[in-house]
Amino acid sequence: RGRLLSFADGERRLTNVLHLIEVLYQESAAKNLGTTGLVRWLSEQRQTTSFQSETHQLRLESDEHAVKIITVHKSKGLEYEVVFCPFGWEGSYIKNKEIVFHDNTENHNIVLDLDAGPNSLHIVRAQNELLAENLRLLYVALTRAKKRCYLAWGCFTAAQTSALAFLFHSDLTLANDISSTDVVTALKTDISKLKSEDFLTDLKHLANRSEGTIEIIPIPVESEKDYHHYEIFDKKHDCRQFTGKMETAWKVVSYSYLISKRILDEALPDHDTLRDLKPNISDHRRDVSKVADIYSFPKGIRAGIFFHDLFENLDFSSKDHGHTDILVIDKLRTYGFGIKWQASISTMLQKVLAAPLTSDPAPLTLSCVKPEDRINEMEFYFPLNRITPQKLKKIFENHSDADISATFPRRVEKLSFSLAKGFMKGYIDLIMHAGGRYFLVDWKSNFLGSRLIDYDQAALFKTMNADFYILQYHLYTLALHQYLQMRVPGYRYERDFGGVIYIFIRGVDPDQGSDFGIYKDLPAPEIIRALGSTLIPNFSL
Picture 1 (tube, one colour):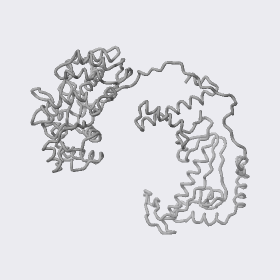
Picture 2 (cartoon, one colour):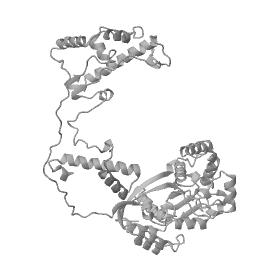
Picture 3 (cartoon, rainbow, N blue to C red):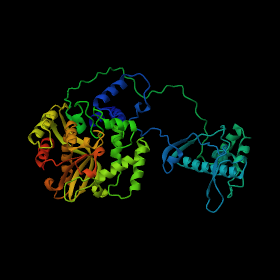
Picture 4 (cartoon, rainbow, N blue to C red):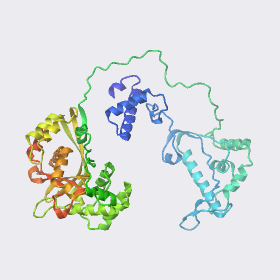
């Protein structure tokens, strides 16, 4: 900013840069473009000769001396040095049969007449009210000027019932009972008899009585001269050569960025994983009979977002099943799913809320968690040192436990994200506080099969490793640890953190305990310490 403003045309240059940044941001946000896509889009805009959007037109470097166009309503209470009122002849004659007006009772109730006949008392009152409103708006417009006000007026079409015609050329008055006197019709009759010379005569009488404060001048004709805003330079311009060094490693990265170039048959995080599962007999029978159970519920990104939104707005501790059913129906309609799924979704919610999440003597369930003890979709950032797949692989290799596959570190090493530093960003589905501990919960709507056995611990373990969810929850645990360490006095990871719970909602059954659909882990302090020391500057556990 300082460098640009040092030039003679610095304000022009700075405005162009800020405008370009704004256009690029809007395009990136609207189309979810990454750096490469945004550069490609910018290149196309520079080379195209087709019509450009109004947002791409060159802006004034400063609007300090620019003409401001504003409605009369928005101008109320404001002042300007000079004001132009080019269109002050809004008519008050009503042609529609549907009218609105206020009655002449003490409360002045508003009345809607859907079929008002011509010359009816309702039409008279509505027109008189409209004329009074036009007079009020004209007053607002004419009193905005501090030094000078230009008002255009003449024998215009449809101006016979305007506020200006009433003020300048009529002896009529708006009586207290404006429902009895047809002022607008009388005004139209009187003004229609006047000629342009009569208009000018009335205005000259007004100017003569103003003691020099009002001047009548004809509207200037259009100038034949061309207007040139910019100077024309004969001097040739050369493009300066950039000799600096671009920092390409700095970026805001996420878990999705780290795994974005893994094998393509693995699902994106937080959405259904579609696998090439071999269809079994039960799958075939379910398809034929079209059973509307949770296994048959549609799969894909839209379904994943639907379930996340549903749990985010669900009161876990509520005993009002009717309210839950209403929420389910509302979300089904919002995301375009049929109401036929309501019963199966409600049943699934009851099972998930009642399922034991811990093996304590009094096991933890979601139904015990009150709204004030949870945070939904918490966004986080933490500063990031230079990170590579090899660094992550070394951490998981040195601190692996029974919940991490022996091949997982090698698979992490094969991730192909580029060298990165800057900030790590993410969203945690649910953070909850229960039993004196904090838990990290993630909703998974992945379809692993159409039987409960397809969601046993072996199947979940395989999915957690294959889809890199293990990497995800270690990063999220690190972020949550940092948050709790700053917000909770006396917080200690070993005592206060309860663990990670991934709930595969299609495969939860409280009658079977936590053996199906629920994956739990409590990352050792050593691996969180190793991750923090490697990834976060000045980390402490």
